Image (cartoon, rainbow, N blue to C red; front, side):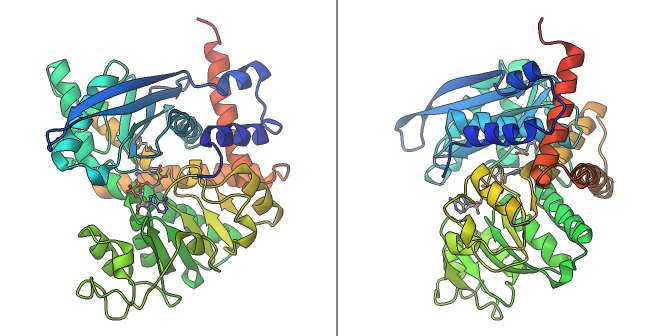
Length: 429
Ligand SMILES: NC(=O)C1=CN([C@@H]2O[C@H](COP(=O)(O)OP(=O)(O)OC[C@H]3O[C@@H](n4cnc5c(N)ncnc54)[C@H](O)[C@@H]3O)[C@@H](O)[C@H]2O)C=CC1
Ligand SMILES: O=C(O)CCC(=O)C(=O)O
């Protein structure tokens, strides 16, 4: 990872500050997380060994409503990363106008070294650790990297055990059977595909002529790939931690999704590797390239959909993509942003591009509160309306002509909305 993600988030705020109509004192307040809880999580693993994990939950800013944000399981989680992610959640919720503040959680662990039983125990320990901090009207966790509907089911169950009754509204991204909403699993990728389509309309370019490279083929990357493929774009490359599959004629995205869905790795899918011949579509002649090469491919759209800090001062001069749509949180450093902005490469910022997940989480939370469920068509239509409206707001702010790029336009709106909530509520108790 290039720069410290928290410093990067602060630098993004600073870049927007000169254009945002925000009181200086309130702006200073917004540069600090409200609180971060660090928890120690002893877990007896299935192997019989006891391992002590460390986890965090950061509530960054709650002026606009209950805290909201995912939980990440990853070996590189740090307190600063969780705080940056919680800050980005705050600006995201404000930009897409949800009645939420921003939060994020993380546990330092390598999920692929843990059994399903270990993951359940770890999740229950973590939920117990942060349960004093969360609640349907207080702070509502959701999935992020390496967590999924099953993780949310364990969290909901653990929280409910302590309350003595079922509390589905305490987390979102749950399985349908226990109060999840149709459409949440695909929501972030769907949002990415919608904003990409809207960007192309704005730029007066045809998405059906476009080539796309997507770094990361997890929940977000794989759904974005499949939806962009359905919209007629040509997905030429995608990756996981083992490397990237690249085919200039276009990947067979559905076959790749089947391969990865069955637990396969990207490196096993590419030409020259016979381990996955039965799963690989005979037409797919993908070669294995590195993640670094994927980022520098000559494509119309680059979609970073893995981790933060991958587009930096070190590689930005090699980037050839015509546009960037940030599905991951924090993939671009401010130093790289300045170069891209100078080159007029449009970058749809994370707080807009990946907001589909939290939008549909909000719709799940509302359905839980109503004790009512909506059909998929209603959820998808509401997602499209809300993310489309945030896209329009961002473009309208950008078209005023003073801000250098779309990220600064989006931050200007998010900071003004959050600051305004602080001003109405007052800074002091
Ligand atoms: N899941 C969600 O609803 C949302 C996720 N995001 C963001 O999207 C990004 C991806 O999240 P998910 O798809 O949920 O995670 P995931 O765990 O389902 O998938 C992550 C993907 O990235 C790959 N990856 C991990 N480290 C990598 C590295 N160093 N280099 C290249 N590839 C690497 C993994 O192999 C996997 O293909 C994260 O930045 C997350 O914060 C943002 C909004 C919502
Ligand atoms: O669905 C949510 O509440 C949050 C998703 C998330 O963690 C994110 O947008 O980064």
